[in-house]
Length: 189
Image (cartoon, rainbow, N blue to C red; front, side, top):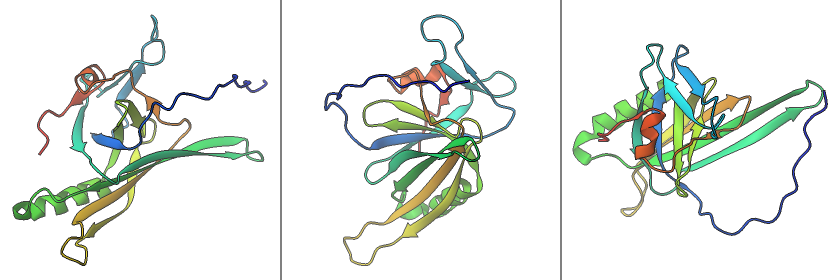
């Protein structure tokens, strides 16, 4: 079987901005059911993430502002005949409160010990699914107190997902529209 050819491409308009504005963390479970629409005009683009009882999974929202990033890189091996995509999500967040420091430590432990499907919300109001097949794991993280008085007090976590395809766009352009794909947590802390 021959591989597909590529389409022609014109230079696109300069209409995008960079960065991400938030993520939804969906705990990964092998028995979850991910389905795509198979009829109508949106074939293959409308996705739902449900548990084994057909209930939409809950995605816990984390608002991000600043130096968080999201990227993927293909790796192809001619000799092995394989292609895979490594997706990297760097999340930087500030402590929730001086009086709730223990919550931040607990959150860091949960993030680094768990495995997740992650919906990334970019600044162009697009939503992308990371870790669809095998989940995304935290591989490193840090808590930083800075040095000088004006230095940032932050936490950072890096998630890595290795999949057979790059992150897929979700068929939603609003936070509310995600409610047909999974259940957005409406009470972020």
